[in-house]
Image: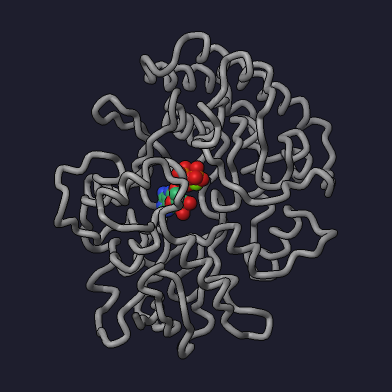
Length: 407
Ligand SMILES: Nc1ncnc2c1ncn2[C@@H]1O[C@H](COP(=O)(O)OP(=O)(O)OP(=O)(O)O)[C@@H](O)[C@H]1O
Ligand SMILES: [Mg+2]
């Protein structure tokens, strides 16, 4: 099928999508090369079909998403890629979409920021479908990333992302709330998360931080904008890419993210869990995206003993351990530790809301490990010097696959 890739109202590139697989089979006329997704044009100024196809396929629900196979069966759709064109590829995180070549459909008529969307796909993804046929596929849930079960919902007129946790502790929604609390205390730009219970299941809720005039570009995409030299660390490559794009203030934003991730022992800050925001109309870079997706933290999948010992805590996106990653921080001067006094009681109050999902030993371990990390951070911030060891670099950008972890 012949489509035009659109960026809001701007035709960007004619493409052909394979009907059986949903992938980008052929490229046609280029209309506005600068509006192509970042990292899809090679250094000779030629659109790279493989890179564009990777971008397009990355836009769909990952095959590893919890419950996706069952959802696809219910919908009668063989692969998540085939869901993309069913909603014009529209998303609530950026402004790209696809239009049939002979159509004159306008972005203003269909975008999900200004128009309500179907609840059908969200219902199916959360295993709550009340029908078996006649689904309305026009939903931003077709283009949402990430492993955890989730859906977009309009709450009080606001577009909100509802996200579940993973078995057995369902801890991620509580962690999101705690992470946004700690970030708020440290005055780190963040996406505020709250808790919502539905049929006894906890969800985190956050508002869309993207507007019809902005878009999220993941760090992964940012890092595709330049080739990384072998002797350049992942951290330095990210800063180099941001500098080459002309985005300012990124080293400080990365300092803040590393410090927060240390405090909450985040294990899954992969390159799609942070990034930049740009103006979708002018393509002007606006800065770092607010902190989001910090739920795989605070020993979310571990037992109290492991939480206390800190054994087996992974680290991403730059270094393999939090201790090494902390060494990248250029300055701790911005941290006002006084603002964290009383944070433990607030964390306790959030964990107390977990009810039967969290016993006392677990809560005590989480709080005690948090308190020790905070103490260590205070000590380190007095004396540490910056260091970027290449042999400690994270080697690939893999997101967590909880289903492999034999829970
Ligand atoms: N508040 C938001 N506003 C706009 N887009 C968002 C928001 N929160 C998340 N997203 C987008 O949705 C994607 C999935 O959300 P999120 O990362 O929270 O899910 P996840 O299942 O926890 O992911 P992971 O697999 O990394 O654990 C993000 O990668 C981002 O592109
Ligand atoms: Mg994520």
